[in-house]
Amino acid sequence: MILVVVAGCSTDSAPPSSSAPILSTTTQATATTSTTGATPSTTTEAATTTTLSLSDLTLTYNEVATGFDAPVLIVADPDGGQDLVVEQQGRIVRRDDGSVVLDIRDDVTYSGEQGLLGLAFHPHFATNRLAYVDYVGNGRRTVVEQFVVGDDGSFDRSSRRRIIEIPQPAANHNGGMIAFGPDGYLWIGMGDGGGSGDRYGQAQRADTLLGAMLRIAVGVEGVDTYAIPPDNPFADGVGGAPEVWAIGVRNPWRFAFDGTDLWIADVGQGDIEEIDLVSTQDPGLNFGWPIAEGSSCYRSSPCDTTSFVAPVVEYDHGQGCSVTGGVVYRGNAIPELAGQFFYSDYCAGFLRSHSASGGALDWTADVGAVPAPTGFGVGGDGELYVVSQGGSIFRLERSP
Image (cartoon, rainbow, N blue to C red; front, top):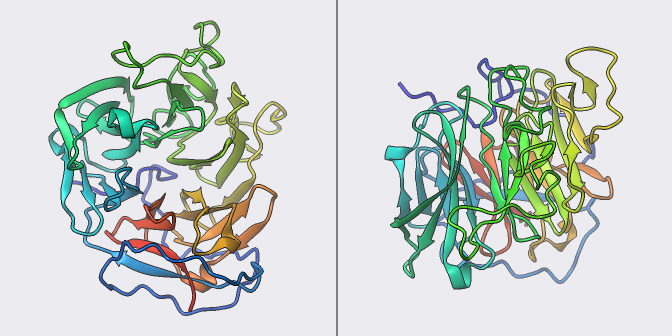
């Protein structure tokens, strides 16, 4: 029997009830949630001519597609076609018609937090046609592979190339997010190896690829797998693994770039969920796990947290169980939201946002709660989408 649980569960036990209380940091006008099963549309919403203050703005969800099998991510098609939905079992399908562009279910371990977890297209996709996936493979290991995408949008299995393979000591805390940063390098979020409490002692070690943010160069002419960016903090292999960009994360299930800003939603242990905001130009950081969980001491108290990155957002397990990040809104339909990083929680399903300038907002009274949100994405229309493990895709829209 296969148990389907969001990759990134906070604890080793079953997640708490989704009826966990939601703390609103900013009161918004109440609007009726719109989650109709209308026919999905890929039409780009026109920019509004009148903008409102954030305190006057009300939002809604529009359920634009449903019927997917444990979706975890939505990614825009770089060719301009239908958005692509990553299904945890090991498929990538198109949002509107469900057509399959990649099926690697035979190679993917799909159970609990394991599965096909990430998808990213090369910055030079228009010329090299390269795409990358992150999954947990048979034998309990994180695998990142490269594919060539055909003109019809399908992934050519004969072009498949193994980029990196990282053994996993346990079945949880796999990370799974991959994305290209503004520097053109591929970033990989790696959990601490699983168990609980950093059982395997990985996150505070720079010489391991677990409990870390990794950064590598792929699609490099003459390089079969990957190269090491010369400005990685341990590029020469002295003091740490060359691939490591930062350490001290527990399970960075989702992260996102906005210019040189890097937002990391790091799933907590038993008490605190956190979001970190750092610059991609500041390598060698330490996010503190497991010495600290969020800004609080974890293993012993007192503890010295002065050298760790402090979260910009944290909340306790009275409000949720497992943070789900997140993207920064840069769409045209709701310009008032520019610069807002949106995030949710797997158990509570709320919708909140935070800006780099420090403003915190809670939109849940407007939009309602999404059941078991597993990921966010930016569609080909530039708008924000939320993915529910139950199989639905929701677009964030302005209330009528």
